[in-house]
Length: 340
Ligand SMILES: [Mg+2]
Image (cartoon, rainbow, N blue to C red; front, side, top):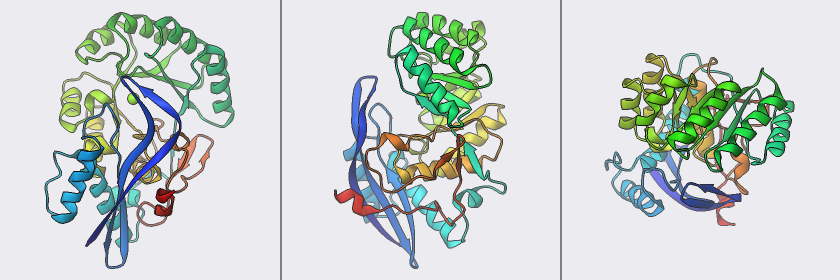
């Protein structure tokens, strides 16, 4: 098997502030594996604030793996995920099946996705929400925790008032609320019937008390970024929903294992992007497809954050993305884009 690496930097349409850092571009490495004339692709793009190593560590781990393909990547999950996805793509292509069909007996034909409402003022957010619903989205997501709690509250109320009661509304505090903020925010979340809140505070220990007082399901995302931490929260009964991102978990195999563990415990599973390019998004789309038709909206409508991508994503129609039906990922990147 031949392995080739394609380092890249893809600019975002506009910088994204996440906690302590600002992301202006996505820097990563595409991995291409070739065997018997068949290719498989994976992507490794670390995100600031997430485990799995920085860019230099990820690239070094992949270069070491190319030199010694049996090298252990377990301490470099983002690099491991790229290899795992490329192997999965390659294997599915060789068996002439879409990846989702190689992963599950009854994959979904399409998966629902949520619209991220990015406007930070209540009127703008309400207008953005109405626009998303007009496009067919039935699940909306608001980021909270980055502005004063009173602003978060106004925005949640404005969006609910604008879209009515039939649209699912989920919020993500990205650990940005204090416990006091979370109490205020969750009181509003109960009022406006929030589907779930991701990462309400920085410490999952707080969540037990919050769940006792507020009937709002809690979702683990960055606090469960490695499979051991996620499994501990699932097994400990600390959360209601598990957000599954392939890169920090180490790829398709461990993402599906975590999803199965969460579902066995009666928890919801939501597959989301890691601000991925089209390679990573296709991989996540097939994993979401493998979870079957009955699932909450995935967080995969993120392709538009990139100003330039390695190829197109399937069109989002009425708030759903079709899972490709051609072999493997159903997609191969155009690496000529990376030289621009
Ligand atoms: Mg999140």
